[in-house]
Image (cartoon, rainbow, N blue to C red):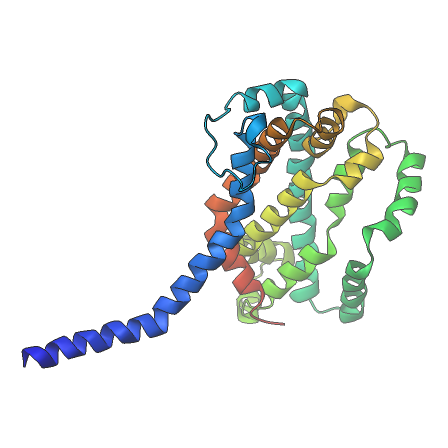
Length: 287
């Protein structure tokens, strides 16, 4: 009887390893591969100069040069660039959330003539690379007198983004139309349905759009490079490029600056990853 019980335990363990153990091992291996570049970045930011290019590479530097971080932050006006980046990223994210959610509501919950054709045209704009519209947009903003200010980087966000409209429309279509019909019968206006019923149910999708938008504006390099002329208005992405141009051979400080700039996005993703994954899963449920 004891042998039989031991055999059953052995079989259960073997089945668990066969079904889940291999999956876990594969996930751990993939996780190590993906985290390896960031670990190398942090390791390099702490290395003395004589350990930077040694082979085989030194993963844990001795001694650790923590002084690379304060030195890197003093070489450029870091806090000014951080303030400029937040001035652009926060209003742009709010603008995209408001405008894209309203437009997506119109495309998914309200029937009107030509709705699908207009939505198709809006989706087609995603196929245009930024380089195609870059020059016409620059001419428009120059004629408006916006070049050299933050306006070209913020105000267009209040007119929606095709990708975010598509993402939110997919989510709104998963919500039962009976909710809207019941509210209409009770006399609720269309804006009331949007603000009181649809928006509270859309938190995961809105959080996903907000995170995507904030990351995009935080890391954006090309648009600030085109529109910002005064270095007192530079963002962190431009500051990093400026640092690389002036102190490119200071690899330790360059990597330290890269870690500092990447860290807020990593922390933000770490705390919102559950909502982010849930939003991605829900928006892909219905086409």
